[in-house]
Amino acid sequence: MGRAVTLIRSSSLSDVAQYAYAATAPTGSRLIFLAGACPLNKDGSTAAVGDYAGQAAKALENMQIALTDAGASLHDVISTRVLVASGRRQDLVTAWKVVRAFFGDHDVPSTLMGVTVLGYEDQLVEIEAIAAVLDS
View: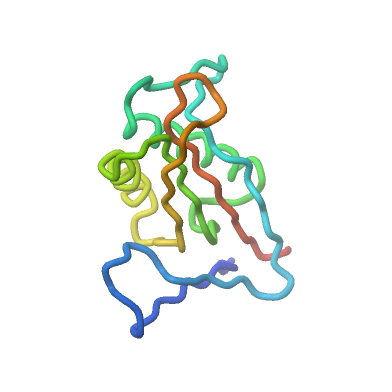
């Protein structure tokens, strides 16, 4: 079965961005809005305390489980928002590198943001995503 998501790149914009500038889903596709994926272990404890890369990896692992439970996969993601609890660009880049590697050639439109605090104790990273799948 084909994919609902089409990534759009623009030759009129900078090629520095490591993601597509836009994405579309056709009429009749089903959108899946995921809650922010947090770096929580199954017991509710925060994984990789103090480690931006480790928390990004755990959040992505949890996001992938939520996608599967919703009948979608990584390649169905149409956009992401990566929230990093830090005012240091280096910490944002550390988390982003993990996200970028995880998505590989499916370089969805993304926003990377530094925030002051996230919801769980010791939480440094949260990843929001929207996916689109073709209705069957």
